[in-house]
Image 1 (cartoon, rainbow, N blue to C red):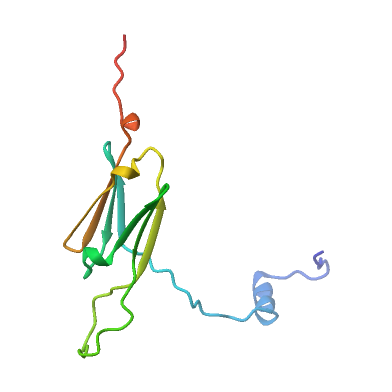
Image 2 (image 1 turned 180 degrees about the horizontal axis):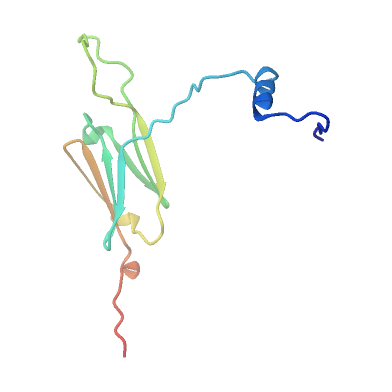
Length: 139
């Protein structure tokens, strides 16, 4: 149950100062950052498309898995560069990523198509035939 102060009116500044000095919590800097991977997802009458940035990677380094109605795409960064080279500067970010989406049943995951060109992984998942847009003629 809260305390009711009837005798004294507290301004917002009084409350702020009181809360600042009587706070039991310690100020902490966030130590887990969420890094969003660059992805474009769009849809048309044929299906859904995924464009995923994979700069500096080749298609053998990327895993694309389909389990039930889940699409999973991942890349795990190499632990350390080979010892025979000395890196002067590393400006290309090759961060590990693990992406996943639950795909609606109106898309046919069995017919997924994947291609990679110029550091861009392109995925296409077609609509199932019964879910494609239909034109109904009026009798």
